[in-house]
Length: 96
Image (cartoon, rainbow, N blue to C red; front, side, top):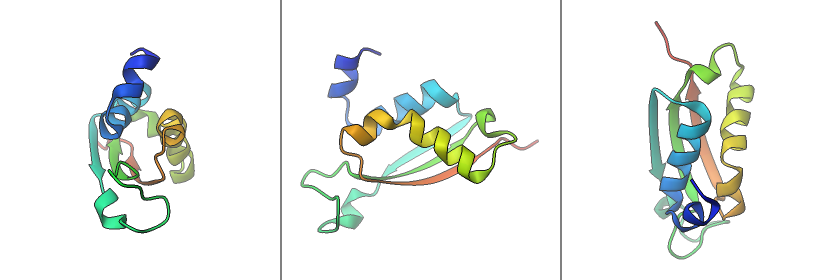
């Protein structure tokens, strides 16, 4: 995906695209929770500031929770640069 195309994506779509590219997840749920933070730090009119991700990826196998979260944050550097303020992460390796 080109930088210009990514710049036009809604934040949720950008998060999904970057995590899919970087982690090849078997499960990915991205939830915009910005409305729950109206008036709080980092919130802005129009939302797209606070998200929750639930991601299952083989990339997390053998990783600690901190290492898995670092992989997610690294994949989303562009989203943070565009104004993503807060991210709640549930990152797991596949089981079975």
